[in-house]
Length: 154
Ligand code: RB5
Image (cartoon, rainbow, N blue to C red; front, side, top):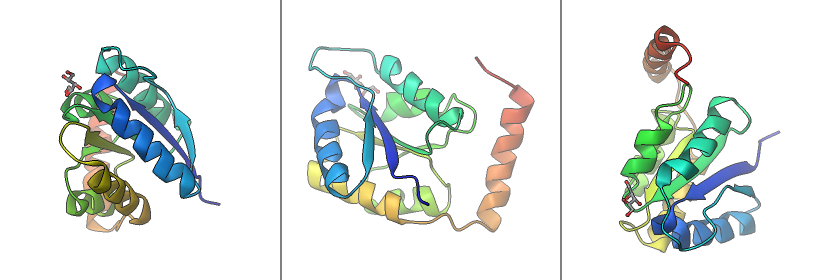
């Protein structure tokens, strides 16, 4: 059965969008694991991106969404973790490709860059798309080989 759990976290710059995406996903039948932040107080995005990326890296959850102001900081942090394929997307095409070609397990969004309507659409498209496998699997295998060579980074 499909795992309907999705972890989500943001810094202060992504919090408003996080709340909107949560509302959208809960009403679409997903179970959200909200890992903060819970206030508008200024925080450091790694403090929220790291626990989520760790969860995905350990296989404790299959999918996650991270939001900061641009999405750049969260994607840099998340992609440090073995097995994490975090994709920063700005439109529905990249959201679809992130799953079809890259099998992205974390979707990253810039809360100061995209509006709520587009963000909801990107999330929906990412969740409803499927990894195409084939030549794309070969490419992901090459990324896994790098991770194996590097061993446990933390
Ligand atoms: C916070 O001001 C901002 O730097 C952060 O949300 C993010 O955009 C970093 O990449």
